[in-house]
Image 1 (cartoon, rainbow, N blue to C red):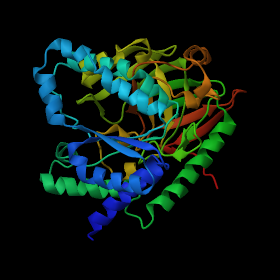
Image 2: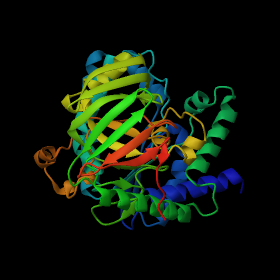
Image 3: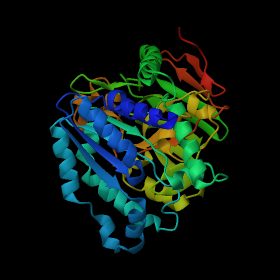
Image 4: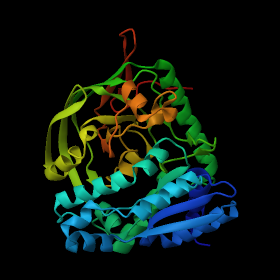
Length: 413
């Protein structure tokens, strides 16, 4: 068996046993691009061997997506198939696990009217609201991984031919997901343990505010009372541990929806809806984006912020050291799963209820009363760099260093 074939087997096993951590009798629902067919088949075998009852797959084809955006009538983008939403909701109720293989072409829709994209994203988000809320509350096991596609690989490695670019991207993915190690599952257990120690430290601190300072960034973020930091592995409602993101290097928590003030500048491009947004700033006052600029993708950013009232507020703050496997690759991935785990980031839109003590059991109204943001969107954007400093402000007003020059300002045993 070739080294690539061995790594692909290990990647499939990692997705099944660490990502979604499939349980006996459970259904696995996979969304995947056509290019992932070889991996998906291996994942299906691993899932059934682990005792899965069903493995269902929904295939995506970006060429067909482009054709739809290019030729369908405008009214088509205000609709989302009810049967698709209902199918996911049924699977949620049945306790299924959900695996997304996320490998978008960053330039797919660059010549499409951003309004069409925004309309469909809003229609899809509205239809899938219950499904996404379930996953964001960790009711079910879920995970996101990626595979190289020709367009994505060429975007990262434009100097290579298509075959070489795909091969190179596979090597990078295997490295940053720890698949290239002898025992990736053991390596992930150790990685989750390291992140959990950082989570415990921050949860004990219960900082009132975080203060960000860096080139183009001067931002103060108030954290909700009784906020909960998470990172690495999560635990489902049924008590099963799973890893929502492979790879992951972040620890994250909930900002107060009304407590963000100042200006922040992005440090990596944001791939949103097949378009890139870059060199942008957001100015916040009392939690709301009151002004913004963008050298690239201004209209796309405008439509994103106009999705609903909550789209102009933050739902997540995440800390990621500059010295981490993904950042150390010195690559821009144009894929949020990777880029958000290479740099500190913030997220516009909906907050994770699990980032608030007992939040997963709260109603929408109770969450809002505690300061949790609600929106149809949840969109991460990267703000970390080797120049970023972050301080935490304790409840008694003491200011303590958390990050210096892009990395943790302290070490834990």
